[in-house]
Amino acid sequence: MTDDAMVPIAELLSRSEALTVAAMLDAAGIIVHVGGEYHSSVSPYIVALGGFRLTVPRWQYGDASNLIADMLAAPEPAPSTAMRRAVFRLFAASMGGFALAASPYVLAVGLKALLPVLLSPLFMAGVPVNPQGRGDYHLAAPSA
Image (cartoon, rainbow, N blue to C red; front, side, top):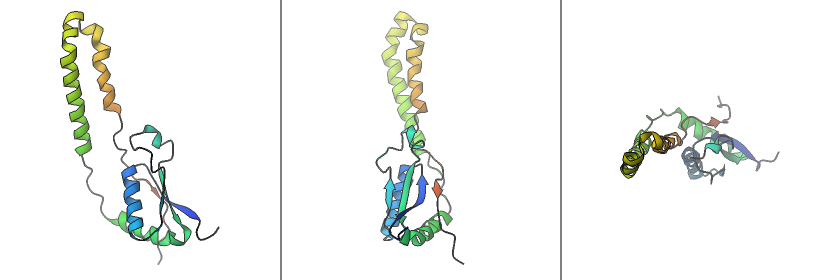
């Protein structure tokens, strides 16, 4: 295998994490390719596709490994609840609007006939917003 062959350095589930790590490597002068860069993080198929695969040239693999190892050594920040709150607000607003629009029908037909329709917005709660969790990093062994 030649020195310019691309080797995997990470497989990540979060698009934002993949692009952040790629930008960090790029800023350090390391050539990086993000496989699946244009896939959406919200897609449930991203796990089936193998996530976002970062590859670097073999001759820059050691530098990339050291840079990522330094990044992973830093304490992990507390997870943000902003996305969860935003989805909850959207869900509450849509339920409120739906209840307001459906109230005349409930009065005319009854709640039992509209129960499946009234419960349908609950499916929005199952939409994945941003998969959380650590990806797989393929780092070189630390030099002694």
